[in-house]
Image (cartoon, rainbow, N blue to C red; front, side, top):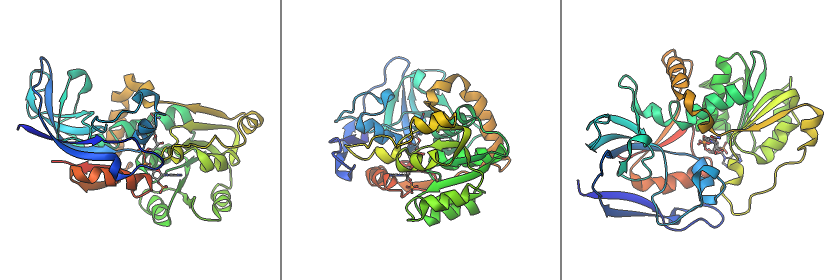
Length: 333
Ligand SMILES: NC(=O)c1ccc[n+]([C@@H]2O[C@H](COP(=O)([O-])OP(=O)(O)OC[C@H]3O[C@@H](n4cnc5c(N)ncnc54)[C@H](OP(=O)(O)O)[C@@H]3O)[C@@H](O)[C@H]2O)c1
């Protein structure tokens, strides 16, 4: 174990992200220091929010940089350890990045429960599942019988939001970018309706799919879909602003849609952003409930897998173009 494989950010994207913004390199493995561990990556998730990091629009990610390993959450196995709490062989969730091995400090490690499939920590039990859970339940505050609309609904966060809303007794309408995705949401995940925003009749189809209006809009996209949701929201509606994926893959993001603040005022709508980290002290409670829903078959997990570190750049470019259904995962070892 002397060499590492890493995908580094070679250049920052100008306009759309391309595979050429990345480079696969081989490097020497460093020694681990006091208390540190070496994690061998099993797999990592490719998620839309990391594109905001490359754009400089994600506050928690800091200024975008080149020459560093592309960041991501991953699951791995401890290969060397100077810390008794994390013995060799233990499985952990950590910021592996796009690389085969990483040196980690204990505060950046979460031990994976032994009775749980580690891959679940990249979807429902990882950042995206917790985002779906807290964003919907705490920010959206859905009540049984209400209508919940979700954008990027067939993506990692979105497909879980819709199912959690169904568990809570809501009517669920997904918005996504293909008829195939719409069918998956309805036929496999139990959404009540799904609308393709690329369809020329999108606005009328959304109206037809939300005859009672919308009470909670879970916004993963911003842009035109947020604009369309504003006009369907009922008085007292809530908008949970989770992300702005329609404006990440560009150097010139558009301003927000018309209707803000006018429609918010006239219909007493609450629009609130959040970061999943705001709820870090409650991750354990959410994890217990998410595991229960998975075990009971109420929460189905869609995972879209690629094999090999070298597939990550292409997989990310494709994800931003809508190529994924559910959580996109790259298997490394
Ligand atoms: N607030 C937080 O703490 C937090 C934490 C995690 C993630 N997030 C946010 O959650 C959102 C979803 O992330 P994810 O990891 O689950 O990604 P994802 O939904 O799995 O993948 C991105 C999806 O966005 C859709 N998309 C791309 N361009 C679009 C456009 N111009 N208009 C509409 N949809 C477009 C594509 O699906 P279509 O085929 O439907 O176009 C694509 O599959 C992101 O905005 C991310 O930043 C927020």
